[in-house]
Length: 261
Figure (cartoon, rainbow, N blue to C red):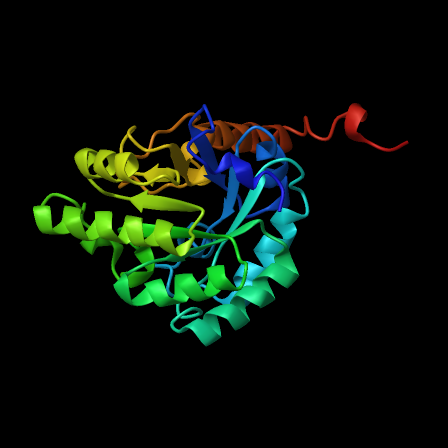
């Protein structure tokens, strides 16, 4: 597997990761970002789902193959969808399908204590896995009920133990979602594999965002606190559409430059 060495504490710069669901976006990101994730967030981002539980293997296969075809330099990461790794037998069977169809460098699964046996089985089968802990979106039917974790000592201890177990069982990295800064710092300082945060502070070894959030492609005004817009694509695209519409109405488009003779 190429460049897996980037996922270690010796990597001197913080690890960057963004999602991609289409070849065009993957091509933009490739080589500029360390990891490109085909996440099951495509359920809500592309398909308008209210959660990620409706994302299927076929969806991940199609988008994973399309995206991974364009990635030459960045590491390729693929989410295993909801209910595809409930036990170690199904997990390995479905993992093989995704690996054969999409050829990602790593698979990502959402981890609880019950899923540690699945993580171990996949690692034993020589599969590179990222362990996703903290808020695990596949556990929620209603995203409005998601709350930050790690505020109590019990939650801190639980998350730290999950991270340590993930490392012991062979995970290549731990993704921390929506946990407090002090808990993220505690975990990062106590494991030897990288932590990648989303809503988990600067104390992580890396960061991940949904690309559509990064460029403000969505019209959802209620965004999580951790989302930062680096470009207002929504506004830019809206202005372009208005200009196009005006030129069509005024018969300025297509001009001679855009017409076959």
